[in-house]
Length: 427
Image 1 (tube, rainbow, N blue to C red):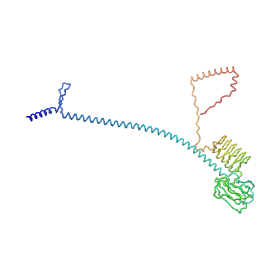
Image 2 (image 1 turned 30 degrees about the vertical axis):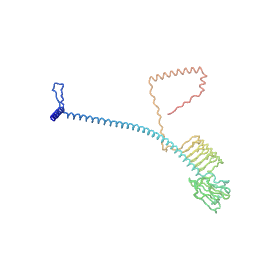
Image 3 (image 1 turned 180 degrees about the vertical axis):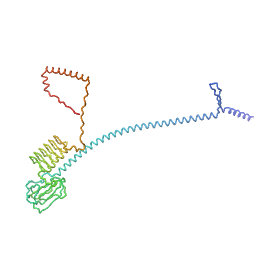
Image 4 (image 1 turned 120 degrees about the vertical axis):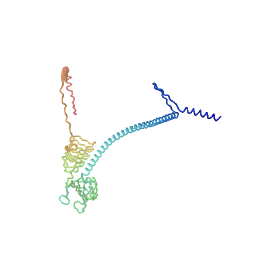
């Protein structure tokens, strides 16, 4: 009996469960159409709910994923913006650096240009100094009295000289009159005139010859400068001195004008000359004229080149180059092809660069033509205005004349005053 009761209970439950496994949906339209029923089983409903939940989960996941991705993109965008800002700042800094470097380069160019000018000027000065040092000048004897005499051996073939002869005393020093190299040292004790001879090549076409009797102090190949000892006389005697330029004889007297020497008249030389003294007249030289700081020339100078360290009161006509050193003073006009004037020197006069302009590398300067604007015809109104202005000016002039007649003293006083200088500027 008990078992039967349990079976009945199970049967009721199964019937109840079977009854609740589905739902019927009644669809009633607003129109007069018949109502429709839709049966939905419990399993189908469960599938729909499961699908809806799954779809919702997927949508939520997609939304969350998009939100995360968007956040990442926003962070990347912010980082990119920050990077762009940093790059812009870096670019501005680089532009400033480039601008500063450009300014520095321009400043360096100016400095280098000045350095090049200084080097060029120094090279020219050194070249001039080297040229001066290699031009024989002065008396080749010191440490003893030397008197220039007529050649005592002029009648003898072996003793005759084309230069000049000095008589001097024992112990006199024979020195070089310019920088150069000893190319020949001669010794002949049997020579009745001069037992020793020295030849100096100065490297610029100048060669000097020294003949004497004494002890030679140098050897062949020795480089000497001006004033270096060549020999010492062992006894009273003679010293013969010759100068040749490109093989041609030059009178040594034209190459030395000492500080105590005064020349009145025109000094003419077919070679170069150094002037330490005073020349009251002109100087005409085929070579270079060197005027030392103690030298003075009062007169015109005509030469191939000139170096001015002293004072010149006269005009200069120089074929090639003029150099005025810091102590130099020139009071006169200069006509030269090239010129170098030190900023501490003095020059009062005009300078003409005698250069053939047709051979200039830069060509001739093209002068622009000045075209006067054409006057436009005046209109009738302009003419009337001009006539009115003229009448007004005539009236003012009449009043001025009346005032002038009333005050003659004032008019005379104004007439005595200087008129203002009118200056017109041409553009």
